[in-house]
Image (cartoon, rainbow, N blue to C red):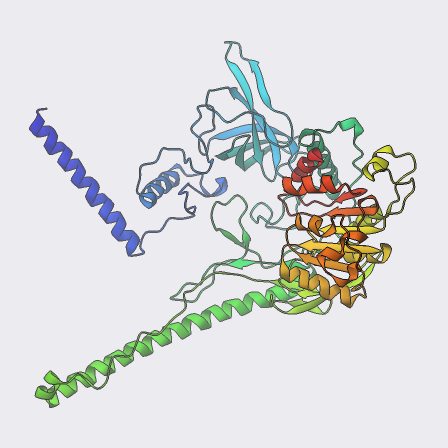
Length: 581
């Protein structure tokens, strides 16, 4: 091809690309371009395995994602760690068969796939739930590696077929397609939405099996992440209540925005398990919620649907009235022009077109159902009461319905009794570790002070108040601190407990040794120091899922309290912090 023909071909391809790009842009601006189950900014493909088995649908989604991003993409989505390009990484929607050998702390089954190791692939075997690592060589001498794959709704011992949708640095994530060999521990879930709703992870296993694996997860984390020796651990059996269903006092179902033409509302429920992007499952009844919550849920679902219809009907009527007003204004102006054309040419119409009405944008919402002492509340700002009683405490709490509060009233007393009981234990005679930690305090010393970090509304601090001379709590939320102070007064501990709003690190500024001699009951940070001698102080940690910051742990070690009681909702971050300590 000569130079002139090459330039013509180049110009033709450039023109085709401009036309295609312009068409896509117009479609998007007109709001007529829709991507089913599309992910947010990354543009990666979405939809669990059970709903995307068709290869033609996969092709349509690929085209949709290409159009939505305006740039060419490889066959494998690769954004934010999703399916990296490494030759050994699984392809998007590649199907694998594997045996489940473990459960991670999120209740997902852990299995391994042996395949040729390749340069650039994610590091094999580093995932939670067991060791992976490099395998042996096959008959041809090719190096093999064990790649860890997480599969939800599976049980150890099962052989399953799964479809990979994400590769991470240490493991891959797949959707369950088929259970080829079921575990004898598998049971029929009580909820018909298990496998669809993302709210529960363990219902396909019996309670005792769940507790066995949860205990193992704590122990494995302390060994593999915390670096402790398995033989030196003393992880006790799981403590639970008899109420396996009907215990949860708080639900927060969601719904998307209603259809603006019909007012119809879609699902009212929770995120679909395995879905990428917003994809809700309709939940008319939740077996783990209390009967009172479920009764109110049924009515609330009807109320929000009725409100959506009413809102959309009202908006339509407002727009119709506005259109009618415009028509009447135009008709009046036309009549005035016909009656006095000369005046109309020189004077504007006395009646101006009405301004466009302001109509709020339709949005989705998160609902609240909070079962409390006096009933079920749906207003997040309403003040509610909760009575919590254990063997070592008896408290009444007042808080806003939307604020955090433990939502299993049957387990809370057991947990709080355990925490307070551990905090109260005297330093054992002959326990050199404790005596050293207490800076040489006497054997059988009773601790006199307690510090509750990440205290929230003051649950642990107030529960321990009658057993200690001085108690202090700190929480970053000023609303929670206001609630903690209110509840201290409500339960008669206003003179014994002090609370501060700030980061967990700030508590050590308040209790650092100093020359302060004033009573800590004044509630001033500088007055607290003298009451919290490290040798007689227990520190309770109850951080969020991300665990404690290294700065906080360094200050904790520098403070050197006699005892630390660590409450955690994520055993992996607790194990990490335990390693530091």
